[in-house]
Length: 411
Image (cartoon, rainbow, N blue to C red; front, side, top):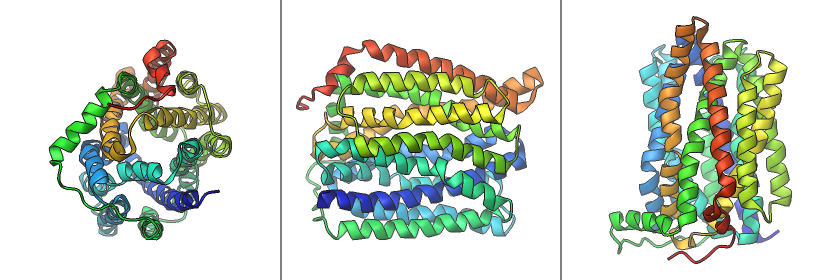
């Protein structure tokens, strides 16, 4: 194991801790809002406010990641994200945690978190060799899965004996631990000297030129925006669907069981990686994910719900790993920050649409059919699964995406 890979592991460990803490807050707020309002739209609104800053600010954050010390930006992003959680915690202690207040706190936290992702992705490229990308991708997926694997189980159990405030306090503590990990890594890597010679807007424009200059990357990003639309509908409605049938503790256990699928696959990729066939594996994993989303909402049996949820999450690390490799190996290292910022903006616009309409759609379908929000959520989830399957199926025939497996210098 190389010295740089050990540094990556320390950095990854910090993000793993942060992911667990963020998952506790996300789960707790979701249950709190659903129990308070009984609406899927309220849960979707909080998710939207938490996601929008990351999307909108991702592009300028990517430019900053190429111009300044990436590790310092990560420390600022992680550390200041705690402010939003502290704001919600104070409101909780005063019994003033209304939906607008919670949305405001989530928004504050997300604004600072927007600094993190482009710098984190670009730092991985700084530290590792191309041969280590695949293994790193598996571990990154594993860290991301912690908010679904570990956090729901812990949060569900804690909520049976404690107030949601305890979850927020734990989350605030994880921010501090993450900053320490990044600080240690930063001290072992030479800081990037600020480079303000190129105008800020020109740097952003260059990121667009890099992406559009590679037809395969551009098409892959565009298809990804459709995929995130359908997956976002499932992700936002899975919780109200289960909560309409069971309690918070059952939801926590169910989410943990489902996320074990991501754990199994991410561990495998972290050890073995993928060395070929990225294009086919990407399309196949997303097709299967669509099928499993559809089956997830077919039954009210918790065993079947967990089974198909497990299979869905098992597909995600493969898709993320392949997508990450195909893009990372086709973009020069010195511009990866701005490129990832723009890629994140374009590919994740689907989430914005999903978070904006899925909750309203589920509530509307449930009201029209007079069968409740659970039925409406199930209907929208099954529709999104079918759409994800058919869109992913078309990727098998896209030669421009297949061509990304033989990287060429970006113009």
